[in-house]
Image 1 (tube, one colour):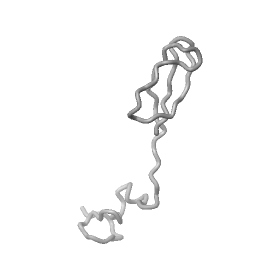
Image 2 (cartoon, rainbow, N blue to C red; image 1 turned 90 degrees about the horizontal axis):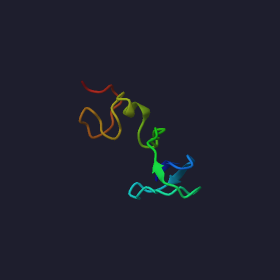
Image 3 (cartoon, one colour; image 1 turned 180 degrees about the vertical axis):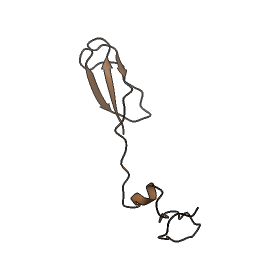
Image 4 (tube, one colour; image 1 turned 90 degrees about the vertical axis):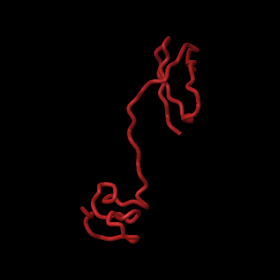
Length: 82
């Protein structure tokens, strides 16, 4: 679940909430009861679990073990096909 950042329009306090994407944003400040608004913030990105995908697969290096670029059914250790 993502963490959303909010700011109160009345007291200007900022707070975060862990909530589902499908959940409606809150609109009441827990500090003063004023009107709160969800902020648009820059995310830090995401992490891909490296247990099933190699770094070279993500960078377009060698043919990957999940879907080889040369149409083979098994992994190949050669540069990608042109």
